[in-house]
Structure formats: structure tokens, C-alpha cells
Image (cartoon, rainbow over all chains, first blue to last red; front, side):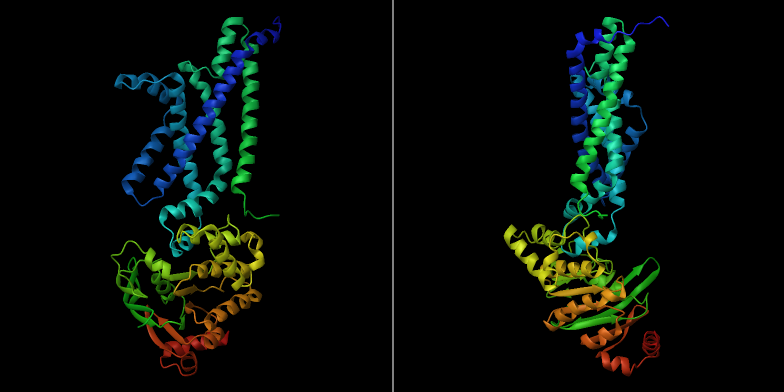
Length: 224
Length: 244
């Protein structure tokens, strides 16, 4: 093998990489906050007594879960302008991620809601609480605690999936790696570094989410 | 005027009619025990008093609050009717104090200091003033059930429903819960209990209601009913529980 590794040439592109990492993190944070917000609302709707609403949310979830993310992204960025809806590539990327995570987290959070013992809902009702109050104060917290590990995995999947957004020229980490190897002709080094950075990001995000979950949802959990 | 008045309550689960036109009245300060075999409809009847079971027909009146099957919003009724469950049903993510404070805060919209004071008072009443910050997972079954009682009492209901509240407890924990109920009875709280604690029913209750096949077939003073049952069903039931 005659190839000589040269990672030092990547130094020149440090600002590009930093920008890429920052964009990936930004997309992930925005996508997660809004996506999980939609997931909570969607799960509440799917558990509600309103049948048309349940069906509408169910259709949304199935549509997103059974189509590729790349096609969803292209539809938003290239398809919607035909209807006069135009947006910059970063906005399209965030929108696609939010819609995607929203659908998956709706399903995940609904599972947590379904696991709520019926007696706790009855206890809330017998205290005179309204349906929305019961959802907010009694159901949601323990439900989120139960599904937090699954939701954390999904968030990491969405973060890694954001690499697809390079296809519409969102300047995230994969885009940066592409850009670098097209300039210095060192694809091994560029993608190796991108891989290492994704790995570090994923490990970091998992750790952070585990910490957050522990803080927010583990109150009252059985102590050993 | 009776505090609780049930008129012609009917309820079916699918094809099975579990309440076949039940009438019952409970006066203020009365302690009523509902007994009967499992499947006799006593729990369903109790749960219909605060609307946890939607009745098919009949009228429920509690302290002038009138509910019939067409009613959607049951909250006015529920503010007057507290309930304690067999499985405690504490909110696991909230401490004992927070369990008691939640509805005071979000339903009664009480201010923070008043909420805290009311919760402390309610927990003290069930002998758990020192467990304010303990989570349900850190409490014994008997303690959890007493927190559940405090949670209901704090809302100042007119009547408290108790659905087999000692059935899920280890035998040695039953008495700490029953003695709280006994104290409430002595203080004049109106109580309706579904119970299998026959000795307790005999000692504490003013009125005994025997349900069989979705109907009340005997009611009266406990001593009277236990010693001189007038229907063969009650005689058989009394024989069964006393043989235990």
C-alpha cells in the first residue's frame, strides 16, 4: 500500500470543520427541541378522545415512518417551491428533521403514555383535575421517564441522519468533509475525521441526555 | 335532606347489567359499608358516585350537585366527593407532600403558602407529617394509603369513598389505615366504604348495605344484619366470611 497518510493538511480547514460541527449541533438541538415538542403534542392527540385528530396524527406518523428521510428533505427543499413555499437550506433541514423526529417521538412517547397505570388517571380525575391537567401533571413526567432511553436513541439517529442534509448544501459536518476532500484530495483523512467527530458527538449527546433524563424524570424512582 | 342520594342507578358493561336500578341515600356524617361478593356491583356503584363509571340511567345527587348520564363535566361533583383506591394510586414522581398539594394548586388554585400548610395539616392528620418529602417508593403500603387518604381529605370533600382500601395491604399494615378511617368517622366525616373487613364494618359503620346481583337486597344497622340476616343470600355471605 503506497498511500501516505497526511492528517496535517486538515489543519487548514479547521474553521470549515468547526462550522460543520456547529451546524450539525445546531440542527440537532433545534430538531430535538421542536421535534420532541411535536412528539408530545402528537402523543397527547393520539391518546385523546378526538377520533379525527387521532386519525390525522396516525396518518402523519405512518407517512413519515414509511418514507426515506432524503426524499422528505428533497420534497421540502425542491418540491415545495413549486407551491411558492421557499426557504433557505438550513431551514429546510431543520423542518425535515423536526417533522421526522416528531413522527418517531410521537410513537415512542405514546408507548410511555400507554404504560401509565389507569388508576393514576382515575386518582387525578377523582381530585377534580381536567384531562389536560392530568396529562401535564400526572401522565407526562413518568411517561417521558419510561421512554427516555428510546427517545435518546432516536435523537442520536436523527443527529447522524442530519448528514443527509449535506445533499441540499446545508453546511453541516458531512458537507464540510465533502468540501475538504474535494479541495485537498484526501478523502480518507477527511472522512476519517468526520467519522471520529460524529462518534464523539453521538457519545456526548447520549451522555448529556442520560444526565438530563436522570435529573428530570428519575425523581421518586425506586432507590436501591 | 340526605347528603348523597342515588336514584335508580343502572349500569351495564356490554351485555352484562351490573347495576339493576339501585336506590340509596346517605346522610351527612353517616358511615356506610357496602358488602357483598365480588361481582355483586358494589365497587361499580361506589365508582359511579364520583363519575369514574358513567351510569346508563338514574340520577346521582351529592350535596345538591345533581348528575345524570347526559352530564359531561363531572368536576363539580368530584370536588364534593373524595376517593381512596385499593391500589393507593399515588403519583410516583411526586413526594408525599407534592401528591397532596397537586390538586390544591391546579384545581383549587390555592396560593403556595396555603397549599403547603393544607398539605402539612392533611399529612399530620394521617400521622405522616414527618414524611412530607418522602417519595411513594420510600413508603410502606400502609403509609402510601394514608398519604392517599390525606390527598383526598386536603380537598375538603363532603363525602369520602373508600374502595377496598385495605385489600392490597399486608395484614400487619391494615390496622394503621383502618384506625385513620375510624378517626375520620369519629370526627363526623361522611364515609362510604366497600370493604371486606367485617369486624371493622360492624364496629365503625352506622349502616350496612348488602349487594347481590346488582341490587341492594338488605340494608340496616350492622349488628342487625350480621346477627339476623333476613335473606338467604346474606346469611350465606355472613357464614362464608365468618368461616374464614
